[in-house]
Amino acid sequence: MIIKFAAPMFFANSSELGDAAKEAIRAAGDHTVEHLVVDLEAVTDVDVTGAEGMESLLSWLESQHIALGFSRGSPEIIARLDHFGLLRGATVYRTNRDAIAGLASGAQPGPSP
Image (cartoon, rainbow, N blue to C red; front, side, top):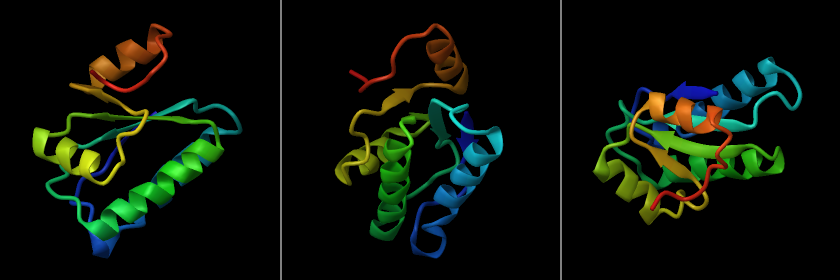
């Protein structure tokens, strides 16, 4: 599943991504979603509160045994996520097509080089 977050991740919307992702995953049905890729193209900033919201989503995904990936993030946003420790175990894809192709091939996602 790919979900696009079209705003900066900051204090005013820190729970929106997590809420939307959980709702979409639950709507798909039990054990249907194995991978969540967050499309970061429109994310222009990540602040501490936004990082805390993402950390909460990460913990929930781990409890559901769902792997996390990111796509289309600018180098600055990827660096911010890394700074907050949010890239652990996540694959970073250049495009959504790369994410779909990588996951469809059966390759196990993991940290990007």
